Image (cartoon, rainbow, N blue to C red; front, top):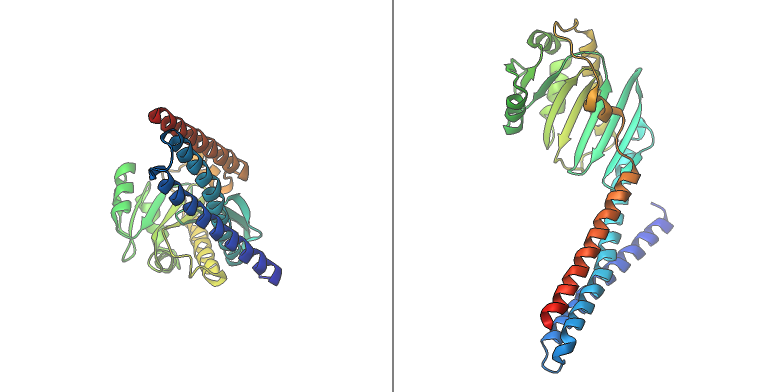
Length: 286
């Protein structure tokens, strides 16, 4: 980070801390004033409302500044980790995406709140399957989809539309090792899905610390190996056509405009709520 950027960040942090301190100071002083016998009873509701408005007007910018600083630092770190996939695309302060071609295959990576990381590599397996470590989530997914379990590599469970295709997929060169590297190393809840038009790796609730350029490249290479293996397996006897929400989520996600609209809606709701609280305080004090 440049000297100018470091100074700007330091100034923003200082402003945020001062605004937060001012917000709580105003609120505490107002509470003492409302409870003081020296303050006329008729004036107490107005002091309380003024304190609430002042607190909101100072605390919200402080929180916003802190959130912006944390988000910018995290986004810069993620862009460095996924630099090989091209420049990051902002979907929202808590969501980001990257896309490129790796060995002629489309690669789409998505980061969102959780944190959650999703990596898609295009393929043409025309079937569906799910693979992951044995846990409550895996059991739940199998129950919801109504699919029976299929013998999987050690430490993993799997289910799929076509058990024979999935068994052949596991026997393909490098698949067992790639699945172990993706699903049995690192933190978080991990799973791999074979979709009709891609292979998808998902990791939820993991530590961002170890996610650097080397780790990101390792994950992408492992998913790309699985996609290549999926295309090498003979076609499924029960083909599944691509399309629907899963295909759209692979390449297209909501833009920053959606986030702005949601943020403005939430802000308006907060303002209305504050106004209702202030009106209730005034009416109850009469």
